[in-house]
Length: 330
Image 1 (cartoon, rainbow, N blue to C red):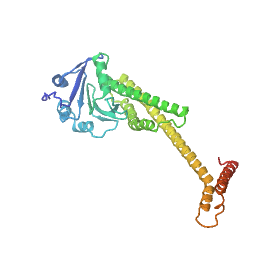
Image 2 (cartoon, rainbow, N blue to C red; image 1 turned 180 degrees about the vertical axis):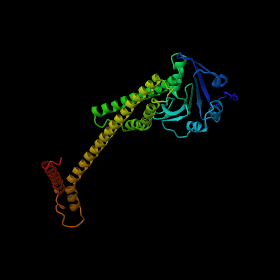
Image 3 (cartoon, one colour; image 1 turned 180 degrees about the horizontal axis):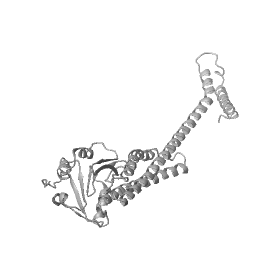
Image 4 (cartoon, rainbow, N blue to C red; image 1 turned 90 degrees about the vertical axis):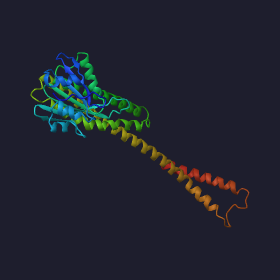
């Protein structure tokens, strides 16, 4: 039997369960896990935090995984995928980060190694979907087997993507209503906060849908009920991906409307400046002409000179405005 590893705070060990085949299970400590891993025929689930150095001891010494499998599980950069190694399967999924202060587009990867009787999951940060599955097992309403447990995990991850999808749709609808209610009332910053998570979710959920579809096709020891459940999760995720695409298009339309309104406002302001400039152009010419400091300026010696000049400028201004109105320039 391999040497037992400590359950210190700095250990990769997070939790482990022995499923009873009836929807419930017993949570195992580190010592009980080591006793049961090689001798117990019941389904076992080991959940690890791969930030700690002793994760390779669990994967290599305890689980006896090949070096290629360990490398696949501990890759620094991962995308949703499915890879078979002998009778086992490695898959990588992404889940919504519900930790305090996290953004919707801050996804958490879940690396999975599954065989008919053993399941190993690895994460870097706390994943709420895993806690939900654990609560179901504790309540006796969880998975019956390892394939069923994987199906539960996939369903929970997809359901949480659905929750975020509904939130984004509600925010998008609010922006569209604000745009229809009053022009210029669209919040550009709020629109940006919607488009950013959409980009990330589209990037990862599309491949994850393909990953679940591929997982639902095998391996041979995956029972039909679990395959149907995983396939349904893939179909549901496909609908969410379509919703992301649609929301991205709606966001682009709102962005174009925002640009159009800004350009229209700018054009109106430039137009008004052009009108004012046109009206005052001849008046500026007159004031410049009569303001030159040379002899012969008419009205210099007349007490009515200023009054006549003001009357002239008003008449010229009204004339220019009448001409612009006649030309339908304003």
